[in-house]
Amino acid sequence: MSEQFIPQADPRAGYRAHQAEIDAALARMLEGGRYILGPEVEAFEQEFAAYIGTRHGIGAASGTEALVLALKALDLKPDDYVATVSHTAVATVAAIELAGAKPLLIDIDPATYTIDPGKLAAALQKPPGKIAAVIPVHLYGLGADMGAIVALAKQYGFRIIEDCAQSHGAFLDGSRLGGIGDLAAFSFYPTKNLGGIGDGGAVLTNDAALAARLKELREYGWRRRYISDRTGMNSRLDEMQAAILRVKLRHLDGDNAQRQAIAGIYDYGLRWCEGIGLPARRAGGTHVFHQYVLRCRARDALQAALQARGVGTNIHYPVPVHLQPAYDNRVAIGPGGLGESERAARAVLSLPMFPELGEDRAARVVAALKQISSG
Image (cartoon, rainbow, N blue to C red; front, top):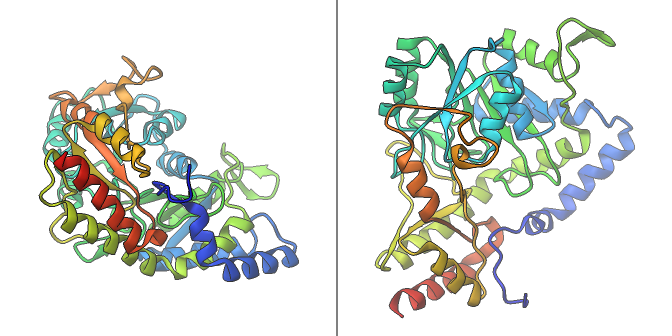
């Protein structure tokens, strides 16, 4: 690609934006000589939990494993169901099976792409078995309808694990996402709003007993070194990623503000374009735009036309989980089916979105879309 090509994401730009601070943090970590579960991880766990507004933070090796650990901490039974959505990264559903439970997939609200509380309520009224937990996915940077989900949890007694892989720093009704449910799982994949330079994750909770269980589960079930009091796994956030994340956490609110400014340019410039729908907002919440996602009548043609004009895009996500070969006819589906999830997968398109994109390149994206729309 030419130097003028606009990528859809650019994690290297995030490193360059904070390079001096990151390099200094890495030098400090290397000189310290502790590379697994040392002072950088401990400090990051405390700082990130305080930022979100929870009492406990437990680092993990990835966002997927953070979900697995959160589920295992609930001591689910093999016949227990965990409800979530099909329009998500496959990691959400993979984690349920890795934790030994059964996925129950619920359709989405077509405006927000998050779990439809009405469809969830219908599943709870006629469940295929015990629904022990629900994983609302805060998708693209916008929170699910947590007020409705918390109310259902009080009525039906399930636990809530927030999937916050795409919502670092977002608010809903005065609380940051990740501090509302029983547990929350975060990913620090390089393209996330808070991303490392490699894999990483964390589980947050206000429950001291769950926090203690999570610390055991992430390291072979150890309370005492080399003695497993429960069956666990190896899922440890390493010191290098923690050192980097501590730097980037200090800039997260500023970076999110840059994403919101870029979204404002897109909103204003594209409001009259034919054949595309702009991202929704939720009353009482903030959108931190992990992705800026259009809904398009002719998505594939639009994507090709943008590529030809030097604009990179992506599709989050092209095939709902229940239609993917590994899961086809293997997962339970909630009442009413998954029609909105299937329609979304055929229509969504993610525009370039990262804090360092800048106003000029965002304006170029808008100009390309206007040209395509008017042609």
